[in-house]
Length: 337
Image (cartoon, rainbow, N blue to C red):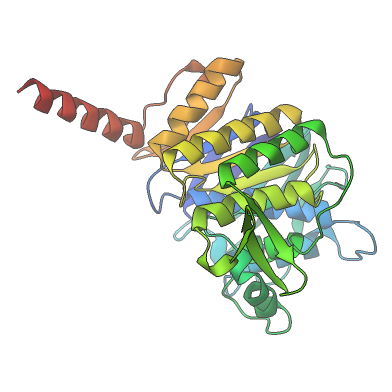
């Protein structure tokens, strides 16, 4: 698992030091606070470690990382990722199973990261980033935008996910927890989403009826993506999954059910990082922490910087929580009038 993340002068993230990470980790904050930026920074390091020395890959870790940062953040040059007005360089350090992967570069850096140190063995596992929007109905456009068009638009989190979804579902015995999770996901969906070889498109199958993916609810498509990645074995028990806004397009009941499935997968070994501004997500993860006795680290964007807490110890002091409490108190006051 990832044990610690340290970032300095990384875009909107002037200083992050998040340690003692757990099976499930949560980033909370308002719009524009840097939640997605943090997840993408983690993802860029992870995918570099997973592509390095895999198969016939000949590129150095520095070359892979440069390419990953360029296509994930889509800056004209990667030096543009250095925080505006910062006097010091951008630096990133990720500790994985107590081994360190770190790098730094200045604002003039274009295509080469010379200061990189890697003590993490190459990973045979796959990590994935699940963005707020589903990609099933856009898969062919995402793939075309990169090859052959080579255009900015869909960043690497979308492209890597579109590629992972190309893998066919594998028949046969799966991890018990994965198989159970897939059954629960199917219950949430009320059907299954599959790739139809005849029409060369994704379809939602409910009973005897097939529906084009374009007219299928956004929330169904989003949950189906996780189900597909479990079914085609792209994910395994040592994968890391980063989910940006798990609450997006989902009813509160579906959010609760999805997070129960996340807890089941985390118990089997998958590590999760989630970014959210939903009280439902925070409260549900708090209840999971209490039920399982787990540490669920949370880092919160506040007016004074990033603050680390643990949902095992209680709900964190954060504007999202404060606003929820304020609304509840307002409701009580109105009821008592």
